[in-house]
Amino acid sequence: MRVEVLDTTLRDGAQMTGVSFTLNDKVRIALMLDDLGVDYIEGGWPGSNPKDAEFFKAMRNYSLSHAKLAAFGMTRRKGVSAKDDLNLAAILDSGVEVAVLVGKSWILHVREVLRVSPEDNLDMVYDSIRYLKDHGLRVIFDAEHFYQGFREDPDYALRVVKTAEEAGADTVVLADTNGAMLPHEVYEITGKVVKELRVTVGVHMHNDSGCAVANTIMGVLAGARHVQGTINGLGERTGNADLTQVIPNLMLKLGFKVLRGIDDLRKLKVISRFVYEAAGLNPNPYQPYVGDYAFSHKAGLHVDGVSKVTKAYEHIDPELIGNTRRFVVSELAGSSNILVYLKDLGFNISKEDPRLRRALERIKDLENRGYSFDLAPASAILIALREMGLYNDMLRVEYWKVVSDDDMHVAIVKVNGELGVAEGVGPVHAIDKALRSVASKLFPELNNVKLTDYRVIIPGEVKGTESVVRVLMEFDDGRTRWRTVGVSTSIIKASVEALSDGLNYILMIRNHNTTKVNNTTY
Image (cartoon, rainbow, N blue to C red; front, top):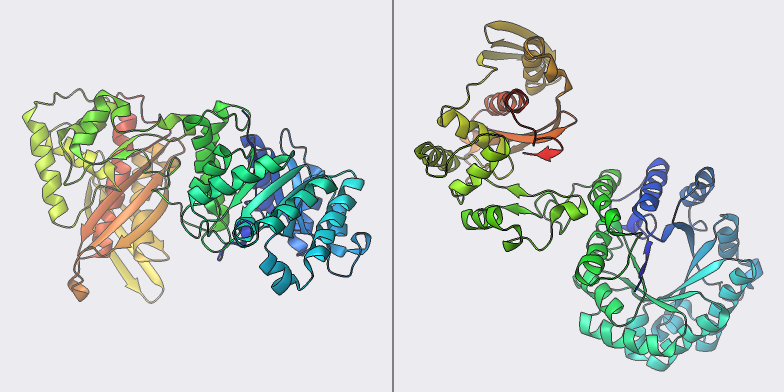
């Protein structure tokens, strides 16, 4: 059975506090959603703001291969005919083939918010849908607050959606606008509505009770064949149903036909990351399916199990949704954690090798001193290789010094006997430039390495100016992403350690006989 998907990232997702997409971002997200294979892209509310109107105008320059672009709007206003309603006119002016029309289905809202009679509200729903249908549009009717409305007055809530069906709505969507419902309630109410209507029934869930994804799935199990949500669960207040979870759950766990096929699932992680960036939000590394740590394994027992049988501790193959498996080196790790990394990099080490135990003890000792390798496995790998006598640093920082005066920062470094001097906007920037000025001459391949993230963390107890600081750095050379860590009472010294490890790590894997490090994070 097929379930169609309407993505509302560009409309409902943009209503999340702190989120604002540029016009270019909206266009790019729309094109990525089309490539993903969703059925409808709700581009915005052309009657409410100029940016959304501009978006629909801009999209006329693009041809979508699969999805239909939809414009959002509300039923006609009280006392205004459909043909004279500016909101409905804006939908028609947007040039779309599909309209998503929201109307009231909770008697409380009808009387206290719209302040119209129940019959007047039914007329507003009917007239608006009929008007858009007469102009050739496909109409998806969103019954706002349907579930709470049904709990209070089931007869009236049903009259609203039946009126929408009679007016010609192609799909009737039941919305849990306040996110108040629990899964068993959604299943029960949705099932009753499906029996009452002939048209396709859909569901639109908010996450205020933490149940948006579960409620969406329960709606489908009750007979809904249309789901709405957003990428990463963006949306008003606590967000909407997260399509990066809803879609794979429906496809992989329940066997429904969604998107164009299983191969489209591999695009989920890429679009998830881009939407986070466009929204100005940090990706959630623990997000189910698409998070960086969704398939990471830290406990030694788990790593040993996954190394033998992947499904022992993984519910699906991470590659199905474009993600990768990761193993974490930490104080909880066993030798299996390190062994997996080393074998992946082409080092054939026996689990009984005593050097492996010494390397693990060294890593655990460093963690007791403030290091944390959960987020910086590249540093742990280098430490293990050094401890086992398998690697000597190709870049050796023999000396460094930073001189700062007001806004000027100059760094001097000595690397492999060569001196480098550079000025930067800060001491760490100056050190980075000076070190690279020498390193790139010795190893030209380092010109492709970019520092993509820099964080300073004060772990554990704060001791004022004597506090130990932990510096995390992330690097990318277009083929691999990797993270390193440095720890010291000096931010600059910790940064030098993380930076040196970052450059040494990529030199190690590019010069060692390994083919398994492309498109991978370490």
